[in-house]
Length: 118
Image 1 (cartoon, rainbow, N blue to C red):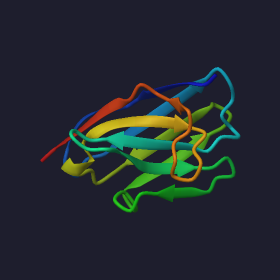
Image 2: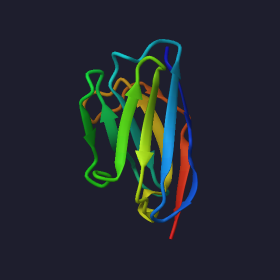
Image 3: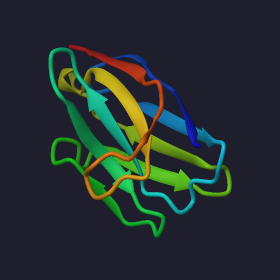
């Protein structure tokens, strides 16, 4: 089993930045595609970004150029650096392990709230 714990959410003004972190435990995730999803109030969960074990990266169109996903396999962590945040980025952000393409894997964190004020 893999346990994922997110951190780094908070309240920020539009145009600001936040860095989310996801720490994995229970087993190494170095061979998993890791990613981030988000769920905004009243909306469906949506894909944000993912990074494969080989380092290939892909993003949702809505965050390209503003968000950067990275991983540190030695530390079993994944990060999401977010800049130029917009109110539309307000959501609960979830770390996920073992994605298949844009489809989430079985392992989820508890989520961290990101609120962007206008």
